[in-house]
Length: 254
Ligand SMILES: [Zn+2]
Image (tube, rainbow, N blue to C red; front, side):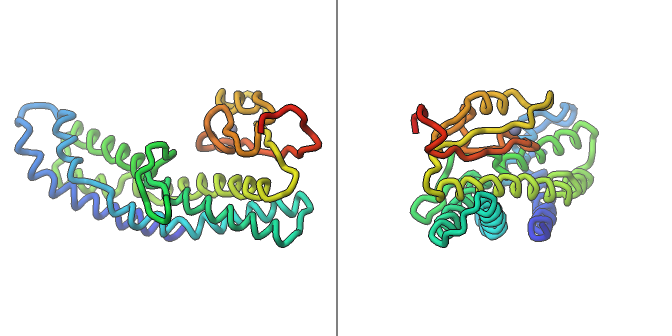
């Protein structure tokens, strides 16, 4: 995804600049002969916030997520043989609502009444993951005795802002959006009351995904045992979710 790549590239330069600026403050608080301490790193990183991401990333990601979710929903409706305009419209609305929330969730927020507010339950927050990657990079640089200029340079080149990270994030979000689109279509089709989690059923299936499959049919608006509405449970999750119609079940608590 070209826009995400460009965004990370420009943020690499920002992070390096902030790191150079931060050294002036942090160096006062560390003694010369001491190995780089956590406190030093924390002072250094304190000046490196990702507040700007909150303003930029949701807007950048939302159209991409909407497109993927609607595609996933359309493909699902087609596979179910549903071509009713009202159902398609309902699916599109749900897919769009999901995309808005996921774009906010990526930066640790949620949308309430059109406004971004903090979301303590956000999953796979890209700003948190980036902060952790930057911290690791800075720790490693300090341990290796890099100068401030060398460290800033290393940070600018780090994996956190790389093209491969942009691709990895895009792929994960694409897979998530595809399944979210399927869920939007299930919720829009009359008669769907439940859902079932399907794993790849080989020895690489994670414990958390096996637990979801073992749960059998759950209500369409209930969470699976891991607290999620649908796969994925984790990056590289290969699971799928299928609808359960009212004439298939008699005993679910929907
Ligand atoms: Zn899985």
